[in-house]
Length: 381
Image 1: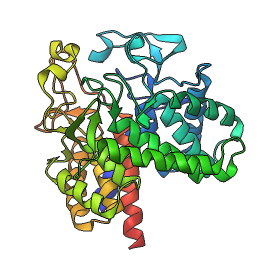
Image 2: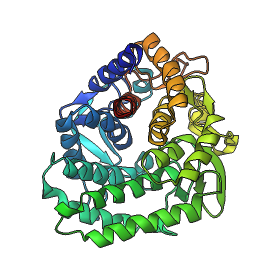
Image 3: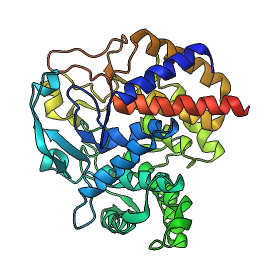
Image 4: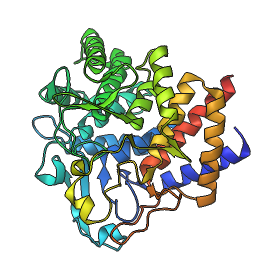
């Protein structure tokens, strides 16, 4: 790893650790000051890569502490009330007792990644002997709940229930089901430590999800963004890169996805989706606040860049890796921190009704994990 890349990695680690609280990782330090499961757990990949096991263990236990009787785990643990001023970076009062959220905006469809990611990281920590087995019964209950949310062998969800929570997509979502498959993969890897979960059942479930992913979402070139009652063949770079990085894809699938991903590269990252979603798929709130491009081939994110590095590392594409990491490192060093979102000119978003979070845990943590993965590959080669 070059001195430049090491410097960029150090900035990522610093930005990540600035989001640590005693019980977990905050999404950010200004307006995203809640514990969002997707932000906190993707950030935790970076924490695990640098040996910060205690914060991740505390986080897993915190999310499980809010598990409902039916097994569902919240996707967000709110520390303060929603307000427009909060999203403009102004100060806000914290709750005495945090409040769990299970549905989109508390009244919409169920959001499932709080459940899947909590189980996934419990399994990862079990493999590292960094968390006790006392949560095993809760894990079993959560798995039973998830089975009730399946259709066509995959999780079936309502609109705006994944990371891209501004676009109206429903059905079998790539984002959610890549995590679902990864969750069972890690449960299976850790299964020798279990008493309540049968090894063969975990293996069979992992393989059945893998078959369903290909049947429902693979289009011959890459995994579709989602499939409701028919396939929607948008290229969702983050989910496809994770499919490679986590070991789902065959060699030919990997090459095919990376060929498509190359066309989605934009400056220091990748487009969130290609082609662009039609205007009517974007939530009215985003149109009213001037952020209809928030997750729609407009505003730029670092998470797709991190996942892309992880995919290239898994595929050992050294030449592409070196060039992309060089460009990304220059950007990180120039900024000196990790912002949430960027305009297409590379500047952090600073609009009338929305300002980019900084530091931003998800990107900081995922980049930390990606850079460390690249570093290990270099050392092994």
